[in-house]
Length: 327
Image (cartoon, rainbow, N blue to C red):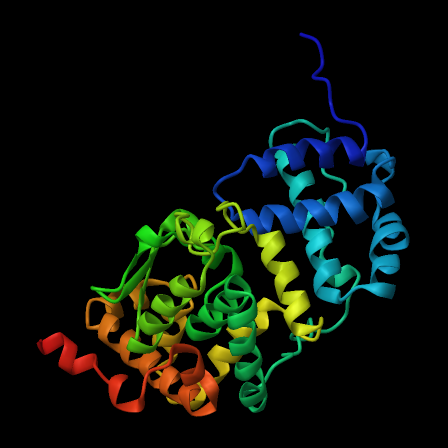
């Protein structure tokens, strides 16, 4: 029996693994896009020509990790190294390479101490300035303004928000359903809609151009096509003047939820973080009601800082949680 045709260079392994990554629907499109970009832009140019037999800790440090640390955050460098290690580990398990040269290598070989948390670009003190800007954007560019307001109002991720279809939203039932295939955790998320958001969605449809209004996508381009994550990120760069990113809205929401006294587990479920058995138990004991009450408290807090300008409701029109359920 002839010997298998092993992959010989680091670049061959990475190219093979990237092909699998791009076709892997078990991970989010955002993850595939981010990691693929890191490998193409940094890892392959640095290590692609290195034979696997010469791929050592010192080579990885000298040609990849250390140069990247000069201009990029430790989190970004860490993710690039993870991609390299994952590709080698899978290739070794499938016997596509003779051995994994980095099997005993870890991030600790290149970085001492803990990875610092990413600094939050927005705080609660920014909200009174932020909301009027979003309201102004809603009038001038409804798609951009609504995208920002929806993400702030619910703490949703940019990818799962841009994939929203009008068929996922029911103003009568006051819910927005994010299908499992659209979420990072592959778990369906049912987002309660407060009176403020229902009014905002109605206003948004009225502000839209007819071509976009007829689109099945909530966030549609001029011709009715879906707004991509890349295009959405560009909108945020323009809105924020590169001072903050879409994910900072999610962090901001989570921070204020804690300050408002929203239960930790409820907050995690509102963000659709992956949870264990404890969450399953909690879900059976009324988490839907707790999640709705949490969003109502959050939106009332936002109203005091400018959210009311976006949806146009008066204070006596926003507290319908119990009245509507009884009607």
